[in-house]
Image 1 (cartoon, rainbow, N blue to C red):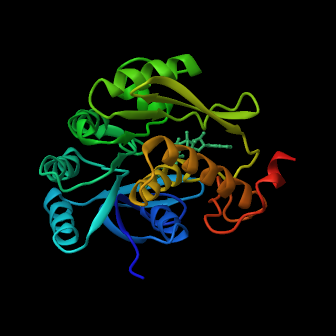
Image 2 (image 1 turned 90 degrees about the vertical axis):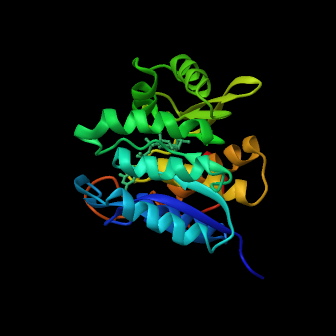
Image 3 (image 1 turned 180 degrees about the horizontal axis):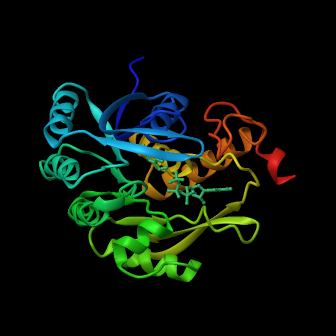
Length: 268
Ligand SMILES: Nc1ncnc2c1ncn2[C@@H]1O[C@H](COP(=O)(O)OP(=O)(O)OP(=O)(O)O)[C@@H](O)[C@H]1O
Ligand SMILES: Cc1ncc(CO)c(N)n1
């Protein structure tokens, strides 16, 4: 049977733990056919991002057109945009109505000197998104104030939703206090929280990419947004559990996207 096709737009991660490589692993785990549009090539490993090589806007546009003119894409995920030009190329396609079920993970890691330009370009893309998934740092950049507590996260999600995306999830993976990993979700019926057990592990590279790619996958498969969010939260938690004992690299190691112990194994 022909698989459903999905598209990830973002940066290549040389170490394979995040970015487009993580996205394609999630799509494969979900039995989807994944296409990719690269906005940048990063030199990074489990210790962090060493360098980002941005691709010109016309190279991003050409890849987008090549994929979208040919493949029946059912859902699209946007990760690292790297430059305002890349963001504009994506926004042009969104405006043309050819990016269905659009999930935007507004990655700002390594945007460095370009941060402000990328943030304004993201603001133009967000109205076309079905879901946006900033972490606390990215949410702070989008709303213009420091997002710290769960109440702040809910407030920021509401503020970002006022610029278009119907659903906004502010993720709290970096909040180390407590035994839960808490995300704040703005829905058209108000704020709610996703709370799952926090996995104690140093192997947490690519959690954000994995979460947003899993949401995209489930939207392609026909879930409504809230179902997709819950399924993605469960998937990222299991992927963290599955890699807890892995020893890949000296920093924050990658997740296990494919086979995990049973869910009970980490709640016990
Ligand atoms: N140790 C953990 N245990 C359980 N869930 C986690 C853990 N770390 C992150 N998560 C979950 O992973 C998802 C992604 O959130 P996170 O805040 O880590 O994204 P991010 O900061 O964008 O990630 P990235 O490092 O890829 O940029 C959220 O649902 C978050 O709660
Ligand atoms: C390419 C890429 N995309 C996203 C992230 C965020 O985790 C990263 N570190 N690298």
